[in-house]
Image 1 (cartoon, helix red, strand yellow):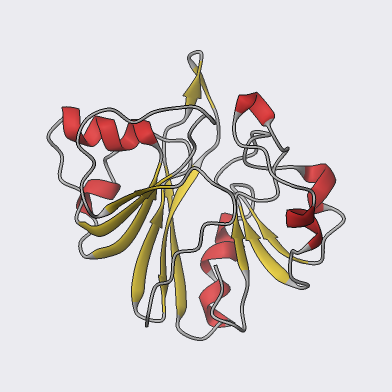
Image 2 (image 1 turned 90 degrees about the vertical axis):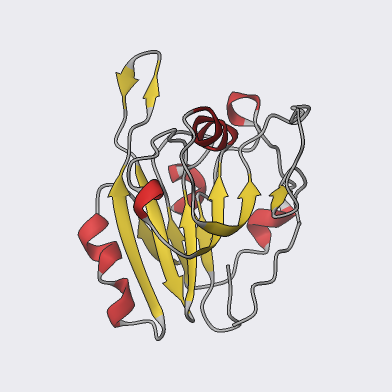
Length: 185
């Protein structure tokens, strides 16, 4: 995400193709802006790469320095972030995971990460963009929980994964590298 002055990378860089998820071209790493801000929901290799990250300049935030992340708004104009500890289990094992509500230039942007947890998300009002994984979206439909978002970006899909059923107009399926979403402010 960028406003032309500040550059944020959410759950990137990660290990390309980890766990059979999306691969990216090496040029994506080469094109990372200097002194960027990196925010991670958790440290699984399909969201986080310590090896790639240590080669980059900038501020780095993850579940182990949440307090510093929540204070980031003190140094960046028109920016705030709320962290929500959310459930993420793999084969019954819980992992430290956070979802985020970013308020930037008056826009509310929600990032779910790998959770299917609707508790905090269902209480947030007037979200401009909710970037969610398929299972949180399906959980909301199955449990008849309304997510108060104007627009959705669905990510974290396997390369050949198909979404069945009717896709609402306000839902964009993010399957291709380089897709750009512009959020006017």
